[in-house]
Image 1 (cartoon, rainbow, N blue to C red):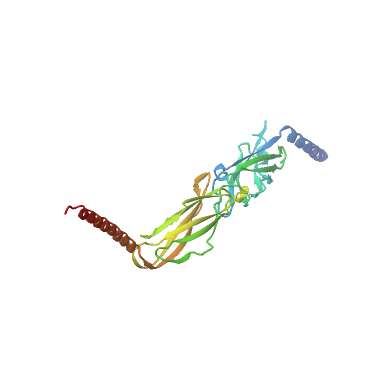
Image 2 (cartoon, rainbow, N blue to C red):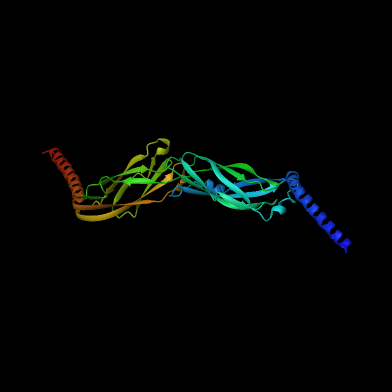
Length: 326
């Protein structure tokens, strides 16, 4: 019996010693494992170049650039180490560190949790670029992104940088002013002139295209179809005046004609007229009232010709009589 008790006591003591030894050895072994079998975090950033270089800027002047972030680990033991941390997510932080003065940029989300794998996992983020009025169309802007990855045991963290280039795009915007109004009363032989003051509020040199829509029969309209206007983003004159001249039907008799003539005004990018903005529609109302006598003028001309012919005929007859012998 005493022998059994002694054996059990000895086993308990040995177990306590082994536990103490392992408790002492494990931290040292863990540190060595972290140093010897370490892997390194890698970040790759890609972005939608079509969205970044879209030549058209939305009316809210906000451009969204879809971006992908891929996180993976590499190293001699990149297949063996990550499984030990498969139950953990690594923390990744995103920062905007560079941008043009004429925009504000935010990245969303700016914090990610991704598992470490040698194959890599990808998350989607977005760059939201708010452009202001000083951004010249189709200039090149550069956004600097910094990505920080935490260390996780034997998987080392790091700091990564990437640059994203984008184009602010063309922002077509006009301000129209018609100082004398859009309604006029004239006589049948008169013309109505409207001055259209146009200000280019967009961010590039612009071609303003004017088109007359559904011209009434008998009416004549004259307007410059294309006008080039500068932009304030490069200290060019952004204002010009376009004249619209309307002539009512020209016919003999009394007139009381009233028509509304619609003109479309479209901004287009000077360097690429295929890039256009929305049409501005302006309606002009003209009332032509009074008598018109163009027919009498024609009659007077006919009578004058007949009179000249009669004078010549009379002189000819007189000459012929004067030349006869008695």
